[in-house]
Length: 36
Image (cartoon, rainbow, N blue to C red):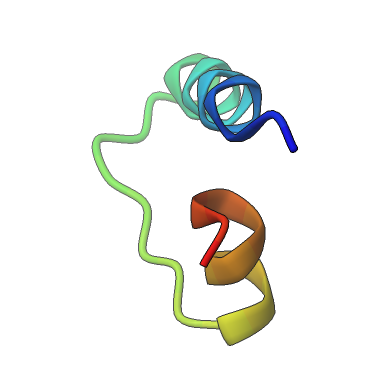
């Protein structure tokens, strides 16, 4: 599981969109991004 890579790809995607924040509420997505 490459959690650091997932976070980096997410940050790059959000930077390109001009977003300042991202709210993740779906448990499946939280587990994917955090590994918990």
